[in-house]
Length: 196
Image 1 (cartoon, one colour):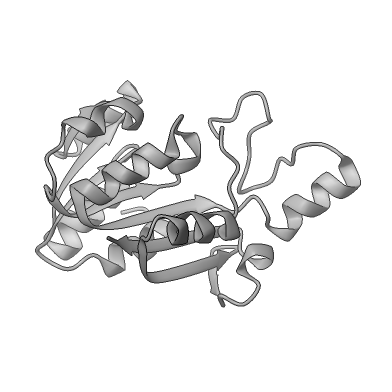
Image 2 (spheres, one colour):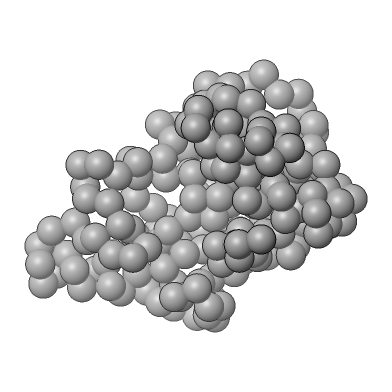
Protein backbone atom coordinates (compact mmCIF):
# COMPACT_ATOMS: atom_id res chain seq x y z
CA UNK A 1 0.00 0.00 0.00
CA UNK A 2 1.24 3.49 -0.83
CA UNK A 3 2.04 5.67 2.16
CA UNK A 4 -0.64 8.15 3.10
CA UNK A 5 -0.23 11.87 2.68
CA UNK A 6 1.02 13.26 6.05
CA UNK A 7 -2.32 14.88 7.00
CA UNK A 8 -4.18 11.66 6.16
CA UNK A 9 -1.72 9.61 8.23
CA UNK A 10 -2.48 11.83 11.26
CA UNK A 11 -6.21 11.39 10.73
CA UNK A 12 -5.90 7.61 10.28
CA UNK A 13 -3.86 7.28 13.47
CA UNK A 14 -6.43 9.22 15.50
CA UNK A 15 -9.74 7.71 14.41
CA UNK A 16 -10.92 5.27 17.07
CA UNK A 17 -10.79 1.62 16.02
CA UNK A 18 -14.19 0.13 15.20
CA UNK A 19 -15.85 3.52 14.72
CA UNK A 20 -17.71 4.90 11.69
CA UNK A 21 -16.50 7.67 9.40
CA UNK A 22 -17.66 9.69 6.41
CA UNK A 23 -14.77 10.93 4.26
CA UNK A 24 -16.02 13.95 2.32
CA UNK A 25 -13.92 14.66 -0.73
CA UNK A 26 -12.36 11.21 -0.33
CA UNK A 27 -10.56 11.14 -3.69
CA UNK A 28 -9.66 7.59 -4.67
CA UNK A 29 -10.27 6.36 -1.11
CA UNK A 30 -6.67 6.05 0.16
CA UNK A 31 -7.63 7.16 3.68
CA UNK A 32 -10.71 4.93 3.69
CA UNK A 33 -8.59 1.88 2.82
CA UNK A 34 -6.26 2.62 5.75
CA UNK A 35 -9.19 3.15 8.11
CA UNK A 36 -10.88 -0.05 6.99
CA UNK A 37 -7.79 -2.27 6.93
CA UNK A 38 -5.81 -0.92 9.89
CA UNK A 39 -8.51 0.42 12.25
CA UNK A 40 -11.58 -1.70 11.30
CA UNK A 41 -13.55 1.51 10.68
CA UNK A 42 -16.86 1.44 8.82
CA UNK A 43 -15.74 4.08 6.29
CA UNK A 44 -18.01 5.68 3.70
CA UNK A 45 -17.10 8.33 1.15
CA UNK A 46 -18.48 11.25 -0.82
CA UNK A 47 -16.50 12.43 -3.86
CA UNK A 48 -17.20 14.92 -6.66
CA UNK A 49 -14.84 13.47 -9.31
CA UNK A 50 -16.41 10.52 -11.17
CA UNK A 51 -13.01 8.97 -11.95
CA UNK A 52 -12.03 8.97 -8.29
CA UNK A 53 -15.41 7.49 -7.34
CA UNK A 54 -14.81 4.68 -9.82
CA UNK A 55 -11.28 4.02 -8.48
CA UNK A 56 -12.58 3.95 -4.90
CA UNK A 57 -15.42 1.57 -5.72
CA UNK A 58 -12.94 -0.68 -7.54
CA UNK A 59 -11.05 -0.89 -4.22
CA UNK A 60 -14.20 -2.26 -2.59
CA UNK A 61 -15.13 1.01 -0.89
CA UNK A 62 -18.58 2.47 -0.32
CA UNK A 63 -18.29 5.81 -2.12
CA UNK A 64 -20.99 7.87 -3.81
CA UNK A 65 -20.59 10.75 -6.18
CA UNK A 66 -21.67 14.01 -4.61
CA UNK A 67 -20.86 17.61 -3.85
CA UNK A 68 -19.99 18.76 -0.32
CA UNK A 69 -21.67 22.11 -0.99
CA UNK A 70 -25.07 20.59 -1.82
CA UNK A 71 -25.31 16.95 -0.74
CA UNK A 72 -24.36 17.00 2.96
CA UNK A 73 -27.80 18.35 3.90
CA UNK A 74 -29.32 14.92 3.15
CA UNK A 75 -27.28 13.14 5.84
CA UNK A 76 -29.04 12.76 9.23
CA UNK A 77 -27.62 14.25 12.44
CA UNK A 78 -24.98 12.15 14.22
CA UNK A 79 -24.80 9.63 11.34
CA UNK A 80 -21.09 8.94 11.96
CA UNK A 81 -18.58 9.01 14.76
CA UNK A 82 -16.27 11.08 12.51
CA UNK A 83 -16.84 13.34 9.51
CA UNK A 84 -13.59 13.99 7.64
CA UNK A 85 -12.79 16.88 5.32
CA UNK A 86 -9.15 16.59 4.21
CA UNK A 87 -7.83 19.38 2.00
CA UNK A 88 -11.34 20.08 0.73
CA UNK A 89 -12.61 23.00 2.83
CA UNK A 90 -10.78 25.59 0.73
CA UNK A 91 -12.40 24.22 -2.45
CA UNK A 92 -16.01 24.58 -1.29
CA UNK A 93 -18.25 27.51 -2.22
CA UNK A 94 -19.65 27.93 1.31
CA UNK A 95 -17.11 26.57 3.80
CA UNK A 96 -19.17 27.92 6.71
CA UNK A 97 -22.18 25.83 5.71
CA UNK A 98 -20.03 22.78 4.94
CA UNK A 99 -18.53 23.06 8.45
CA UNK A 100 -22.01 23.26 9.99
CA UNK A 101 -23.00 20.04 8.20
CA UNK A 102 -19.71 18.37 9.06
CA UNK A 103 -20.26 18.91 12.79
CA UNK A 104 -23.93 17.95 12.52
CA UNK A 105 -23.25 14.67 10.67
CA UNK A 106 -20.27 13.57 12.77
CA UNK A 107 -19.86 13.52 16.52
CA UNK A 108 -16.27 14.58 15.80
CA UNK A 109 -14.81 16.19 12.70
CA UNK A 110 -11.34 16.18 11.19
CA UNK A 111 -10.46 19.13 8.95
CA UNK A 112 -7.13 19.52 7.17
CA UNK A 113 -6.12 22.34 4.85
CA UNK A 114 -3.09 24.06 3.31
CA UNK A 115 -1.99 27.15 5.22
CA UNK A 116 -1.85 30.08 2.84
CA UNK A 117 0.12 32.14 5.41
CA UNK A 118 3.13 29.79 5.35
CA UNK A 119 6.39 31.71 5.08
CA UNK A 120 7.17 30.36 1.57
CA UNK A 121 3.81 31.57 0.28
CA UNK A 122 4.42 34.97 1.87
CA UNK A 123 7.94 35.15 0.41
CA UNK A 124 6.72 34.21 -3.05
CA UNK A 125 4.12 36.98 -2.96
CA UNK A 126 6.59 39.49 -1.51
CA UNK A 127 9.45 38.89 -3.95
CA UNK A 128 7.67 37.60 -7.01
CA UNK A 129 4.42 39.49 -6.66
CA UNK A 130 2.51 36.50 -8.01
CA UNK A 131 0.42 33.70 -6.54
CA UNK A 132 2.87 30.97 -5.57
CA UNK A 133 3.27 27.59 -7.21
CA UNK A 134 4.94 25.24 -4.74
CA UNK A 135 5.11 21.50 -4.10
CA UNK A 136 2.21 21.91 -1.66
CA UNK A 137 0.26 24.31 -3.90
CA UNK A 138 1.23 22.95 -7.33
CA UNK A 139 -1.42 24.63 -9.48
CA UNK A 140 -1.52 28.12 -10.91
CA UNK A 141 -4.07 30.68 -9.72
CA UNK A 142 -6.35 30.02 -12.70
CA UNK A 143 -6.44 26.21 -12.60
CA UNK A 144 -6.45 25.58 -8.84
CA UNK A 145 -9.53 24.14 -7.12
CA UNK A 146 -8.75 26.38 -4.11
CA UNK A 147 -11.26 29.22 -4.00
CA UNK A 148 -10.98 30.23 -0.33
CA UNK A 149 -7.42 30.88 0.82
CA UNK A 150 -7.46 30.37 4.57
CA UNK A 151 -4.72 30.45 7.15
CA UNK A 152 -4.23 28.69 10.47
CA UNK A 153 -5.16 31.91 12.29
CA UNK A 154 -8.27 32.37 10.08
CA UNK A 155 -9.43 28.86 10.98
CA UNK A 156 -8.69 29.33 14.69
CA UNK A 157 -10.78 32.53 14.68
CA UNK A 158 -13.57 30.80 12.71
CA UNK A 159 -13.97 27.93 15.18
CA UNK A 160 -13.73 30.27 18.18
CA UNK A 161 -16.46 32.57 16.79
CA UNK A 162 -18.74 29.58 16.24
CA UNK A 163 -18.12 27.93 19.62
CA UNK A 164 -16.55 24.86 18.03
CA UNK A 165 -14.28 22.90 20.36
CA UNK A 166 -10.76 22.08 19.16
CA UNK A 167 -9.97 18.69 20.67
CA UNK A 168 -6.53 18.46 19.04
CA UNK A 169 -4.50 20.18 16.35
CA UNK A 170 -1.44 19.12 14.39
CA UNK A 171 0.75 21.35 12.25
CA UNK A 172 2.93 20.09 9.42
CA UNK A 173 5.98 21.60 7.78
CA UNK A 174 7.41 19.67 4.86
CA UNK A 175 5.42 16.62 5.92
CA UNK A 176 6.80 16.59 9.48
CA UNK A 177 5.09 17.72 12.66
CA UNK A 178 5.97 21.16 13.94
CA UNK A 179 4.88 22.94 17.11
CA UNK A 180 1.81 25.11 17.49
CA UNK A 181 4.09 28.08 18.24
CA UNK A 182 4.02 30.36 15.19
CA UNK A 183 2.09 27.70 13.23
CA UNK A 184 0.47 30.40 11.09
CA UNK A 185 3.95 31.25 9.80
CA UNK A 186 5.76 27.89 10.00
CA UNK A 187 3.17 25.25 9.07
CA UNK A 188 2.32 24.53 5.46
CA UNK A 189 -0.62 22.29 6.46
CA UNK A 190 -2.88 22.00 9.47
CA UNK A 191 -5.11 19.22 10.84
CA UNK A 192 -7.82 19.91 13.42
CA UNK A 193 -10.00 17.49 15.37
CA UNK A 194 -13.22 19.31 16.27
CA UNK A 195 -16.50 18.79 18.10
CA UNK A 196 -19.52 20.84 19.15
